[in-house]
Amino acid sequence: MESPRTNKTLSASERKRMRDRKAQKTAREKRGLRIKALEDRVTYCERHHGANWVQHMMAAMDNLQRENQMLRDRQERLRVLFSSWEQDESTPQPIRGDVTSIRIDPSSVAPAPAKALSIQQPLSIRGINRDGVSSQGFPSSHSNLASPPCPGETAPESIPAWCLTPINEFGRISPPLPATCPWLAHPDQIAACPSLPCPLDLLHGTRRNFLADKISQALRVRAIRDPERLASGWLIYVFSKWLVTPNLAAFSHIPPFLRPILLQIQRGHPAALDLLVFPQIRANLIQNWDKYDFKEVFDYMACCQKVRWPWGEDILERDGEDNLRIRREFFDVFTRESGWGLTPEFMEKYPGLSLPRIGWDA
Picture (tube, rainbow, N blue to C red):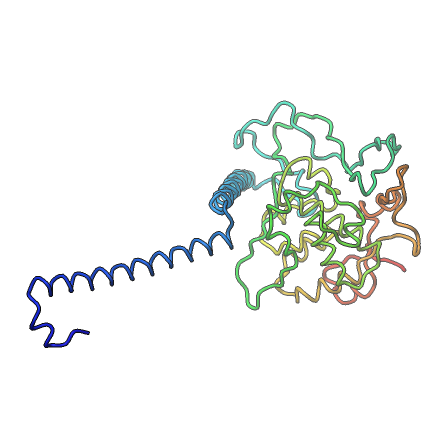
């Protein structure tokens, strides 16, 4: 610091030069601090976002735009569908059954392709003909189950059922419902999964199939037998794949009894209700789900819902290449509604939901 005596001996020009030097020094220090802050920010971005983080953000935006377009298309299809119902109130609409029974006024929708595929064909397995005779053997855990394309039929007056996904928006309630299908929050990862799961992935989990692993984790916390775990996991898998990527191929894997009924595309409801194997129970719960303890109903259902499969019978078998696959007889049982039943405990607890005909005897 300069003393008053020194300042008095300096000329005005010298004092000005000293002030300029101080100002330049201060500016250099500020510039250095600013450069250091920018360097730290660049280092942080490279460490946490990688060199291509901008490309990742653009890809995520593209995915969101595609999903928004799918939602807009679905909204338009539903608008046309509901308008047709209002115009034809005199025709009774079914409460139960597959939505393939809905008939639409041809003038209210765009004409369907001449080679529209039928959506009323029963679920089948690759290599198994209409008589149930296998020509290629049952697919193994390394060659997934698959369904052949449905025969071509002209259906110009029907909206394809595969494009009518359930309405899973039901408003805000307190307390909030538990996340019974948390994997549905990751549609991109589900879309990348195989069209059908391997049985061992559903039973024991896997790092190769996101959807199968999440379903396996959810089912392993339940006190259920392996037959119910494998059967329920397979049905949940194929339904979730179609829900995220709705198309005819994915829809054809869903057994007829698990396909959405009319109420599921008319009325908002929790997504977990779509996974119940009994259509009548789905309808009853969709109409009155807010009157029940949601978590308690599903806890009871997990314990009381049984596959009609003999105790101790194998559910897997080996193919010609020594790979494990779902046993064909077991597959034929759990892909039919008659192959499932409920124990008396559930029917006694919820008599308004269940039907006597679906009882199960151990």
